[in-house]
Image 1 (cartoon, rainbow, N blue to C red):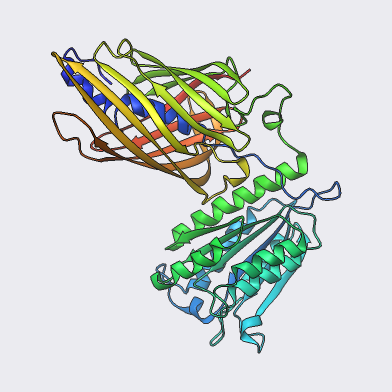
Image 2: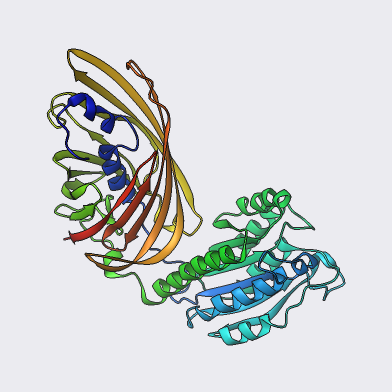
Length: 460
């Protein structure tokens, strides 16, 4: 956002999604997309965080992986490494399917390692003995249903991690049966299904099965590195769930009696909260002036511009915002107004798990006046967001365990304007820390890129 003396050289800054002003607003808004604080499965005043790993051992896993070994060999090794990182306070078990051990192929699933507290060593050791069957079915859904039955005697929270090499060969439309079994068992469930080198013609079938199950997430792993990354993200999530369930909510996430619905634990829109950043375009600051009930007002200052952002919040999260820039803000030649927002900026916290995704859209109306002429331009922006997982991030303000959110934005333009403004796309990545907010962001758009790091913050 380098200053320039000619107004007509400055107007594109405000009419493209990649422009610095809109970027600042988008960064501020997406900072809200970082809640990662929930407690699951409280029953009878006690908790027993439980996880069951499910591994596909059907014949298809005996085929060669892109890593050189068989898919099963790769999956066993990666899963063993990940199990070592599991919280030892987890009650864990290992189930396999498609081994050919049972004559009824569509019931061929076995709890290889029964549930036990801190039994990661037993699971790791047993994984090495799992072999791909020469001829068998692949009852993915039956394995999931059996895992839910296994968990019915534990208080939870409950998590299931499935590594599969393809679709269910027995009952590919049994998502409803999985849901019914969870309801019958009376448990809340987080189900993660990771498709390891699943053939393209089977991906849709696996996704369709997963989408039928509430709380389930499908994650694609097209190669061994992706499998390790996805399993790491999920295990980190499960460890966090277990820790929070056992020790209770952290002080930062404990609701305060006076807190409004905008006072989000990972983006605390409280009066007096403030953040400062060092960005590729100069210094930037955000400060919350007022917040209460379902609204909050933030002042954003960057590269000589100061403007207000207004947030709307509900019990479901921070759902929308708007930013309006007057001609006085922009040197007397541009007025910018945001309208028609829809979708969600910050979904409910229990939905922000690895692989979760959501979308929103808004319209920006820009009026420019220069050299005796006035023009109107409208941009319609559609954004999608997805949770990648947690990462350690070091910035000038400190080192944080932060939730990474990836986002993509596409804008199309229309209106009375002397030149055609082409559609533009921008990719964003944000990192958010509990009790703090956004600690880092990066963006890459049409011919330019940049980002910012948190240099200081104050949250009352």
